[in-house]
Image (cartoon, rainbow, N blue to C red):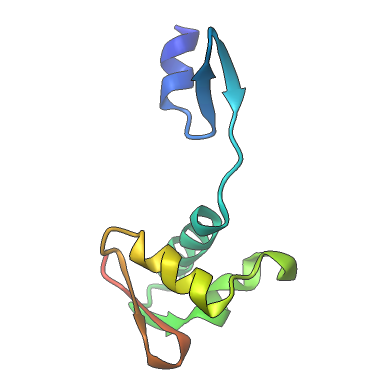
Length: 89
């Protein structure tokens, strides 16, 4: 029963015979912020800056990191000019 729960938990991975916590990548944190903002605001197009306000300043992505995170979103987001984000979800 515990293994089933651990398999479903996104922050855990099995290493050897033990379950260990994983750390989220910067890209994952950025995508979570973008998705949360899109859902809570109801906006389909918004400024990246507005969506990332929930992250500590030291975790804000550079322009290149933001682009890489969005490219890894499987089409859920698109980067528009002037750091605007389009939510395709």
